[in-house]
Length: 72
Image (cartoon, rainbow, N blue to C red; front, side):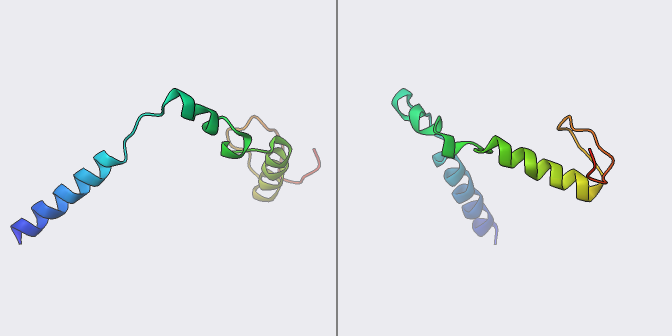
């Protein structure tokens, strides 16, 4: 039983270490593309934020004011 735990821990550590890699200078261009952004469309993101705080009656952390009625 103890060897199974040690083996599982060793496999976990090795898999975590193998996933760490350095991004080379010539690969950074791929990461700078629009489709790699968390929010690629700022207008759609703003609309989704407005819908969320209008339905949930809250605005959290995105500097938007409103009371939840959708009338602002």
